[in-house]
Length: 204
Ligand SMILES: C[S@@+](CC[C@H](N)C(=O)[O-])C[C@H]1O[C@@H](n2cnc3c(N)ncnc32)[C@H](O)[C@@H]1O
Image (cartoon, rainbow, N blue to C red; front, top):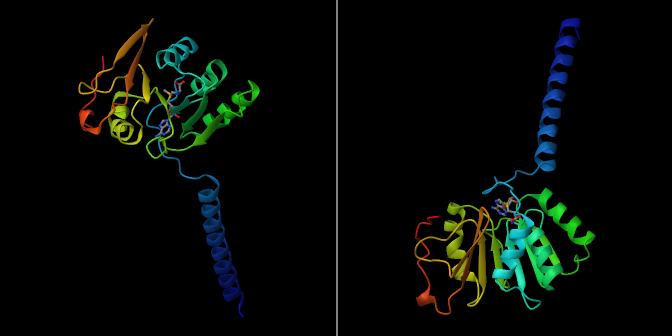
């Protein structure tokens, strides 16, 4: 083989190697950093006084299973377990929040009564909830309302920090605590009595 042909062969081999390495790197990147669905709501924690008022407004007791949809660091579910003896489930799409929540729950000794799951609140199984807590956004409440009405048992209480559910599902009670507002609804007994699932949400 001539020197020129040898150089061309080595060049082609190096190019193939580089291509294979790039391909392998692309695969590693895809596998190690799974694509994250975007947050529907940014993380802003509810202050503790409001958490306690939300649970009080819902009348949470040891018989309840409290679901916080978009649970952040888990403070609502942890407080429900600590102060009221309830069981709780927190769901958040951000794995970092769920790690924090599990860590805090174990530190304060309620790790056996609460469960934290990484997941999309729109896809979560919420049927066992007797209380649902929310701190989302008006547009997210609007999208969530049909799921709440479809999946929650009659009598389940829904408490939302700061955002309502629209004119066709007015809250039973509204409590103001400083700059915060808390709304309470109860899932009605009959489907026929339920508000339309398609109505736009308007907030205060
Ligand atoms: C305003 S924070 C409320 C945190 C907590 N519930 C509280 O009141 O302290 C909203 C949370 O929803 C989470 N989130 C946003 N989109 C979500 C989705 N599609 N499914 C589950 N969690 C989501 C965010 O990661 C964030 O932690």
